[in-house]
Length: 372
Image (cartoon, rainbow, N blue to C red):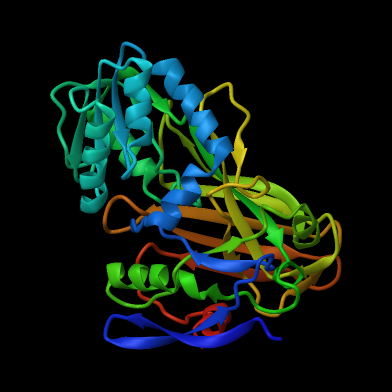
């Protein structure tokens, strides 16, 4: 039985056809929209974050180490106020918990009150870039690292916090992040059939379109890669490159151009890049790595060739990865231009662009197939 079929989703003003898939108990790779940058966290997204044991353990250890006796700012506290409560329980003098989603802020206040910490945690509703604090804090903790390191606005938001809300020399949790890239064979990952959206993800796609006001070529995540080393072995064709470095406890520069290269280590068909992130929660931690570890951060697919370009071991893809700030001043737009160098024939130019709320819809063969 074919796993994929065409369905329809709602978007502002009209319905949009979309490639859907049957969600099975052990499916090949399937798609999920990258939602944190809008932000559109629902119970499913929150649940995935709370079930991410490695992520939770690293953050818990860092908060227990740095919160006692200090004032703390928690940016993006969420409906469960996890790190605000963790800081208070660890002995923080006071915690300011910032949440932009009104419903999540209301639930967070109730959660904090029921836990008995309403006297030590103040929930502030809105963007951290718009709030003022009575005094700068000692520690800033945030979980606004995106599926790409800066995609949820961590660079711009935490740079602003460094300037206005945190004491000079204050501590940031997490410590640093990079965006990662590996050459990717989509056909090998998806068992030869193009991946689609399971029906339960439709509401998230619809909400992303609604938040922007129109359908557009939204970022899509590849779900299932992290849980299957065998799929990684088949579909990851190269070593890993690092771009978009964000030094939260250093000189934080969220915009720039990074030059990188991946060398193919096995033959296959090069369809694009799987993009992830490495995150150092504290300076002396081993990094979390969303390309290879089971995680609530899932790799983003950057399509470069619909049919896939045949490659061999030793071939190279050299590229420039550009990060610029969108017109909202917070969320980055990404662009990638590069050339595939093979032993035989001329270099093949390839490019990818992904804006936070770009105008284009069905602009590439991948998106014309995904939204047929």
